[in-house]
Length: 276
Image (cartoon, rainbow, N blue to C red; front, side, top):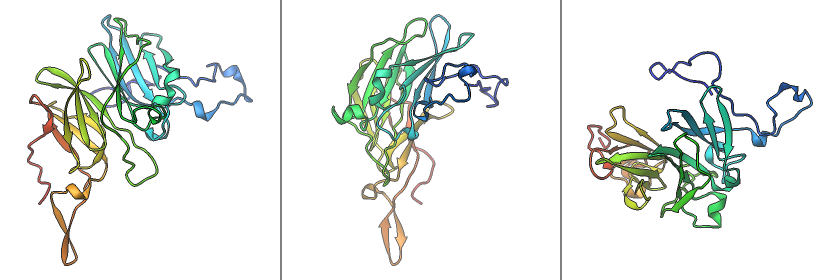
């Protein structure tokens, strides 16, 4: 793990600030030339959050998964905790939860929020819906051993005409001074109260695309950009394109700008001309 300058994006220093070791490796080169480690258990951190604890300590919580998130497991461990206190230390967490396919993470109010995909191995024998799980953080930044999961009514099953699944994203957002969880899914973004994960409302984005795979804030914080992984369903298209002597509804893959300035999440009014 390396540190980047937030203004320039350039790496700070030539040395890594922390390492995530392979679980079969002792961390000592003396394992020798005949020592082999399984590629199945390489750490693959993909999405994460930075946490500054109440006591001022600094931490990273990193989700890891193979296959760009398409698999139904999180081998070898779903979550890594990196304590950035000098010298930095790394620990694998929740090794018993590898069948839960955690694919998105955020933090607020001393809690980690984790999204479990509907296609996880655990969900195949359970509710078959996306779940939002919470993990409490202590004042020193360490994670509780308890994971509380709430099933939603939404799925992330769209495969974009491929053979593989694609993960949705999730973000903590603020609406009218209250924290909510925005969870991408097959048809849009669902919104839940961060305090108790009760459902608030859903934003249908099928005209922009399907399976919201990435969420990001605008630089001024007034908008949440929702980026679909797959093209839109032509049945809900609002404009057509000429094909030969006739017209046909257009399929699209468009980024939706969602307004964060009101009490509910909604598609923003923008000056971007989409249909002309």
